[in-house]
Amino acid sequence: MGDIARVREVNVDDVRKVVAELAIHANCFIGDDIIHKLEEGREEEESSLAKNVLTQILENARIARECNMPACQDTGMAVVFLEIGQDIHFVGGDLYDAINEGVSEGYIKGYLRKSVVKEPYTDRINTGNNTPTIIHTEIVPGNKVKISIAPKGFGSENMSQLKMFKPADGVDEIIEFVLNVVREAGPNPCPPVVLGIGIGGTMEKASLMAKKALLRRLDEPNPDEEVRRLEERLLKLVNELGIGPQGFGGKTTALGINIEVFPTHIAGLPVAVNVSCHATRHESTVI
Image 1 (tube, rainbow, N blue to C red):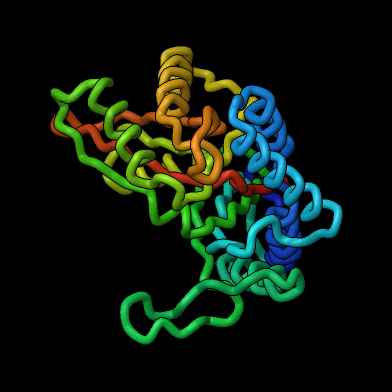
Image 2 (cartoon, rainbow, N blue to C red):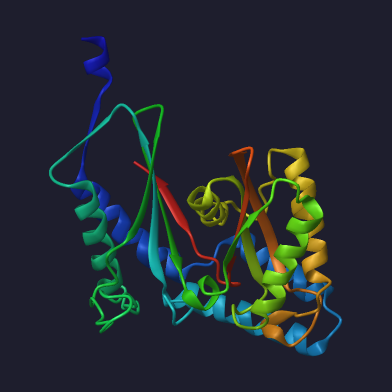
């Protein structure tokens, strides 16, 4: 009886409402951690053109915030991360249906661009409501539900890469791979970028870690000291590439680099780099 008493019921309609609100808010409000990094970049830039570009990016973010308008015309494909307490019982319908309904409602109500097509390689007809949603679920202790939404534009998503390294390859090879990803991307992902990097696991685990890494605030240090040093080293080297804001040259090619690691097989070393633009958007809440 004690175990049953701990179970908490959550109506999926509450999830739908939260997702709809998050979809709008995430697209219109750039996080203050991103804003601070943009301001720092502007202060450090020596090029007047680079300074001007960062000023315009900051002004765009201000207008979006004050007018409750999308910060970018590409309001992305909605990616939802769920951390579900194991003592939660969902009632009132299907959880994934509720999430898709919430995304649809938010994108329609918020006048956000609908960018999802039903068939990826044939007629590519728009679904009209920006669904289906990409949903990742994790079961955690407790009786709370954390919902995070990360609208992902494809100007940056298309620049992302995965490489299956040999176990004998080392940190220097990984660093060169990341630098090549940024070089090849050039101005296409609307730099300054944020890089999410996943190292280890399997092919799909590395890619998922790279995407999830983008949820971490840029002012939140990596708890692993060794990984934190790698993040700092990579950020310095990426910014030395000189691509600069919007590709016009400068010292601010990246605002931050977040890395997640996971154990892997003795025969493998997967590394995924998820490239995100200066408007790296995400919003979370707990119910």
